[in-house]
Image (spheres, rainbow, N blue to C red):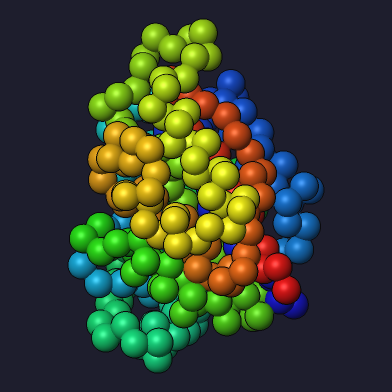
Length: 267
């Protein structure tokens, strides 16, 4: 059965895997009841934690859990998410991209799931019984490139594939406020986050693709683009007339937005 929607999840800090005080954790744990009651045939995750020079898919039969973070509580390194790989999906992704004009598409036969993939998935689908494939992002490319990447992958939805972009609506790790216990949000983060919400809810795809020149404080919100480009892929895979729906919104550390979106084709 087809899955009509695509999603962008702000996965925020790796502590999302254990910290019950984070509202985003409870949002993701309610996923199957509130946001997608249909069980996907397989899942394609575009994570901000896999950067390559050309689009690359992992072709494995069993996903290893990559603990690609440092200095966190020991229990986080003991977490596992042994989801099956999705080699057939990976090959389909490569085929669609090549057919759509992307000249080079790489394969990785060893890489498992980084925390941009397994942390949200372990909350959304804790049984780890759905095949998962990862697709990389290309930081040296732009938003339009990743949007077109998503457009090429749109046919996967008809095959019951859930397409998820996993990043962060704002992502400036040097500007986090460790003492933001009062829940306050710095003005630049709020301004960018609000602009993004308005643009997505109004279906202004071109503005989102050109966010660096259109959005306030774009370079402050995303000094590097790797956590934002998964949104462009999810938006492109939805359809050109798709509008966004804000399905979760919370803040952490004064400037880290957990804003997450659902994209549905208007037709």
